[in-house]
Length: 438
Image (cartoon, rainbow, N blue to C red):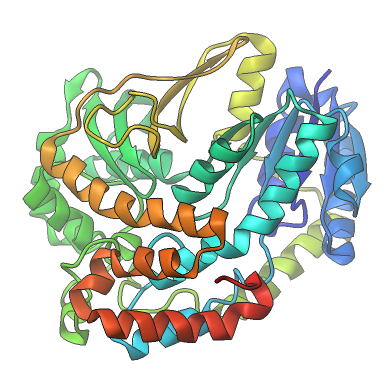
């Protein structure tokens, strides 16, 4: 039976779902689940929750719990990372510094000043994980949830022979959203999606084998639907295809929606849970409130007398592991190096493409050319990602500055001397988290 290591097991957002997914699959429930986190209190909560879940489901899962990385990874067949390095949750400094210079990011986990520096925060712990894997479980598959899920998978695949894939839920999440928009059961829809993470394109979207794009375009004229997803509908209107990730995220990846407060207000979602385009969703106050609520719920489930609500999640990772263990084919979208998969994006960059999985492993699919307008927007982002990769690997301060200068939103509102001043200010603020860059 397989050993699955969950690094960052104290995660409030991901860990419970992975525990449920593993223990409800017969091929995995009899294996070993190694939980590792460097926060003792959160690890205790999730370990207790896992033990209670195993008893409730009556499965023989062996549960290990440790504060140390090496024993968690030793002998692992699969490693899932859901870590949150110090400073990643609290994004106030770079977001607010950037806003002083006119760069009004909504989330900042993928592109722009905050996205670039988020990559630098993730680098040290991810490198520690993958270098330890080289020593104690070199054949294991590394599945990591770490934004930006373009530059970080790119880096890890460059520096290590360990098989690693950048994971994200924006493809299946968007597919489910599109199904809801047109009133179709998700199980009856199909999709073919490719591009780069958080900016991948629905090249095909079908309902019972028929093209469903006409229905999506029809719903765009309905205010009830349009006002839930304004930015993505506008992108589809002018570029022809619907995008992954939310309108909140997509508003900051291009120069069309956030150059002024008036533009932010114009393109702010009016309805639904995504009505936050105009807000800094990464604010410290909002984050702290959410953390307290999640901690309370998890502690009550772990230590309370009630039963745990069991429902499989929609995340890809455990489906991948199950397919490799059972030889039951599975398809997902993963973030991998472009080895001729998307022919009009740069060779060797990180692309998000459909991947097939079986007992032989993960097989990224050939896509060919994206529509030229879609590929051009992806290349705009990849230019900055390439410099983020260079800057992170070489600790090159100038490359980091250049990566930020090439961000489409930053370039639309800042002069180059402003980019330099902003980057230097963020470096000064974050040196204690990321170390020295020269």
